[in-house]
Length: 136
Image (tube, rainbow, N blue to C red):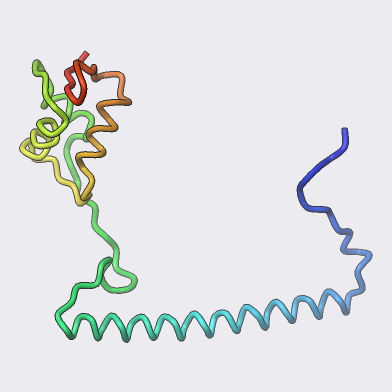
């Protein structure tokens, strides 16, 4: 069976050593140029960030290199949803509110979407009518 698509294999032993060396030098030179460009752009980004913050603006993501801390919950979202829906039939909005009222912490701005998708996809939940769910 013939091989189609994909890159062709090149036998490096057929290429003169000086040509390989020249190619490596070119790539090294391009990489160094890209690194210098990256450092200039990073410096410009830091300058812009400082100007924005000096004007009282907010820069999403925090300072460069900062890590977003994810809240820690004792129960998973699905387990919390199961607890909220226990013996009840609720809408997606009511489940979302119940999850937050139960103490579930999240930094997501899309909690309702996560709740809705979980209700649709997880076999533990049953759709009663449009946007209304209960536990199976």
